[in-house]
Amino acid sequence: MEKVQKMVSEKPVVIFSKNSCCMSHSIKTLFVDFGVNPTIYELDEINRGKEIEHALAQLGCSPTVPVVFIGGQLVGGANQVMSLHLNRSLIPMLKSVGALWV
Image (tube, rainbow, N blue to C red):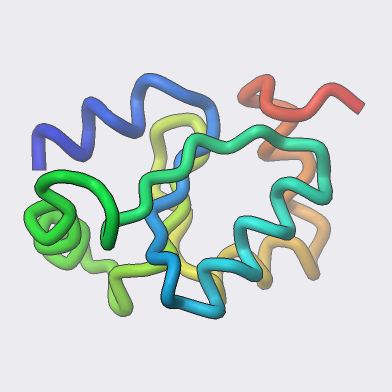
């Protein structure tokens, strides 16, 4: 859990993902299309990916990918991110942490 906290505190937007997950792809595309440069950890490619996935599950993330942190705070998975986007809260969040300037 400490490792996850360290990883998410270093960058404004962090996405935990898997290459094989279509929802992960959709969320990554959404952020990139906004002009955000998120830090992306592909759990099926990195060392200790399973351990990180377990830590995300302990944080209450279900499913464990995609999981988005903005400003070091857990936002949640695809449903939460899309809800924020649809109610027009996502872009202000991104601006407040310096991930988006426009």
